[in-house]
Image 1 (cartoon, one colour):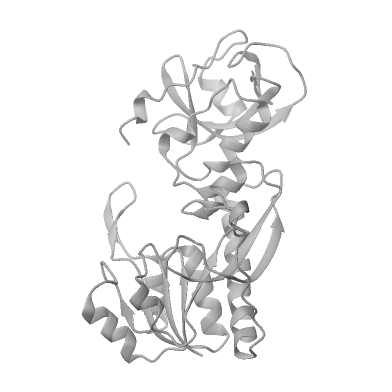
Image 2 (cartoon, one colour; image 1 turned 180 degrees about the horizontal axis):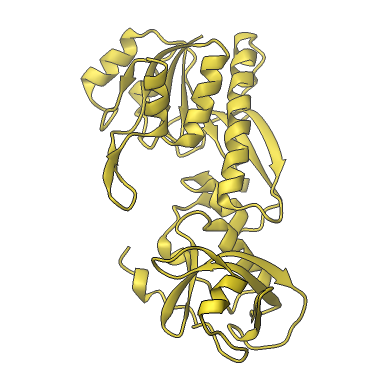
Length: 318
């Protein structure tokens, strides 16, 4: 099929690679303009751009798809379908109408659950037991179009946003190739979303990553996994910020929220609003990620001391 592909991060690049390997004709790749990234804030190309350049595919990086010249360019391609995956720009109705078979979106949730910008993070944070990929016929709404294909996967107890992203990236790539095959065979049947089941996956903010020790141990565990790899769950100890990268829930009910119950080479056990949590990997600002034994060899942390209550002040303007 003749395809226009629109996407930006690695999640999208995995799908584009699968479409190329499946033998589809990629007439054009759309991706976000290069932007500063990383600690050095050097201008960086998107993963999709790098892959498109590797395969010498036609590439555009418009600031908007509302411009008449961009729409005319898309129209002239006479594409069968546009595939959209984490592109980052709104598709106006005029663009949605251009491909012969419309625009298909690869969405990382089981719609109508978790429409919006952060479906992977919100699924973990909410304690969902499963998530998946939805191939959706795009309309003018926010992830409101008809469902064409869905595949689910289990969210493992140790899944982080990174590990779940990687699983969903592969599933999304497989799903869109399958959807196009079924589309060619006229076997895709659009199913309207149940609006009563819809929920919104709001964009993640840095302040959301602060640990509230009043929550249950299970909830804090989900916060840590949700914000790994970015921006990292954090708390304060003796007025110093400390990022928490890996924890595990421990049986027990003693202690006040935020109280350190034990600190040894096996981990730092902290009381939560309900239950106990073992901190296994942590990091000081500017330092390396350290396991509990290595951290405690250079930093004092004693039973009876406390991690600070939640404090949004450091990120309230982000």
